[in-house]
Amino acid sequence: MTGGHNDRDLNYVYFRDDKQPVDGPEPNKDIERARRFKQPGEQLLWFRDGGQDYVIRDPATLKSSI
Image (tube, rainbow, N blue to C red; front, side, top):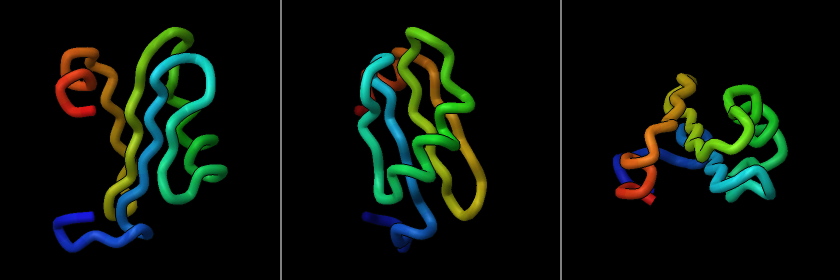
């Protein structure tokens, strides 16, 4: 990880499809938290940085970033 973060500061979950998500360092807790933001059929990147939740749904951004 870069930017001085450790696993407790930056966690993520990436949903490529409606099947199994690609998850980050704390899978069970973070998957359930991220699933609250996901709509059926959409890709979604959820991450928490410094205690703040963020969601990226834009397909172009997801394609270029992941």
